[in-house]
Length: 523
Image (cartoon, rainbow, N blue to C red):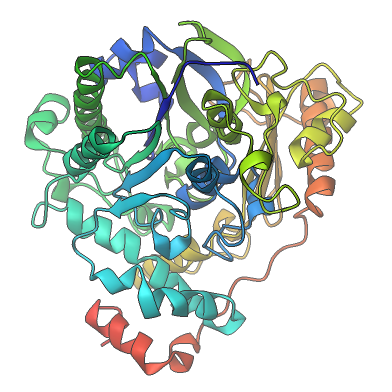
């Protein structure tokens, strides 16, 4: 690795933030003056692609450098198990590491905080033993049993329930100021180099922005008067008209403005304390959000670009303050952080271990070899797919995976049932999805609905599907996806059986049932 004089890394995830709502990406509302100021010092990546459209698998990929089908933290097994994380590697190398978040997925409960010296989740609404101890142990037992998936979905959905209570007008202010304050304290206390990972949750449904930002971006809008449950809309139990969509988008903008102001407070403090120059700063979103596009709300059941083409900005002395159009995969941030702090996992953990991804210069944004996969001895599924697709050896591809959405599907069916609606077997909510995306084209494979393909260079909003027979770029994308599927262990082209948990609660142990009663899931 090249010698770099960067002793610290600040990694910020703006949860559920679309890139087209940010100033650095051309948004015409002033949602992000602080991020725009930061962007003047950073590289702005136009074609950064997330490996999934929701929090858990994306963060597991950030922390392991692997695709969801490799690390396994996804809908079926919603916890990261057995992989050596980026934080573990950096801690072993002598760096101070910390994770601060208000997202219930990023807790010891799911294994994502493994390896951090310090971690704190700002879920004051929930008892501490929900995210640790006996209930956390019960989670794995329950989730590994096919007959208990219904209970598993209830347990994991505690995060959404808690966020709703925390965000509501009755309950609490944003936890972002606390996250920022705790991050500052950690940095202040560090005597060595440090890695601080921060997830800011405000732009996730439901939207209850602070009044000052609400009056700027959604004047006169009462958050309780608009649809704050995506499952109601996606199940067709509720309609949303143009005025309501405008109000929803205004509340969303206000949440982003609040995060931006708090992030600016942290950035200013780093400048004032003379830490800015020696700190690499990464800002991205884990996924985006749909507000009626493609007749969908939220970030479920699809792989459209509003969800997976995410903002990514990086400040590092070897990266020019510029804009880049080349393809970037978000999981490459793992290797970028390793190179920034000059850490090779093989020198600090067991070199024979197969649960850690070694440093790969072809996946570091700082390397002159970035995305030059030729000559790799053991390419990963994405690298192998790019190398083996002979139809177009000049094109690069990113790959996205969305396993059958057990959790979202359960709540979608509830909303449909309450409205007397029966979801058809070919509803997109029942589908597993995988995609290959280049800068020009995308191909999405599904197991229950028709495949979809788009020419992104001509149709960036993906409004007009393209027949592969009519387009070479789409054919090449399908080829790349086929190669990825082969490398990942097979295509998702046979319809998966929906999880059947009708008798799940009857099989739960009494301790777990008692906890569910306390939390309102059982009477």
